Length: 56
Image: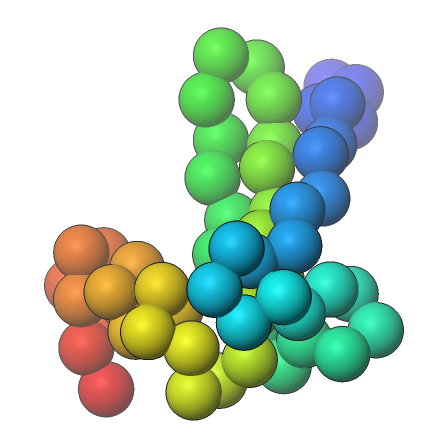
C-alpha cells in the first residue's frame, strides 16, 4: 500500500502551520490525506475534537 497524497493547511482562525502549530486535525477523504495545523487554544481545533467525540 502506497502513501496517500497529502495536503497541509494553515488554520483560517489561528493561522498555525507545521512550524507554529501544536495540534492537528487529520482527515481522509476521496483517497487524500488532509492535515490542518492549529494552536491548542484554537476554537476550530476544539470543535474538531467535539465532533470526533474526543472532547477533553
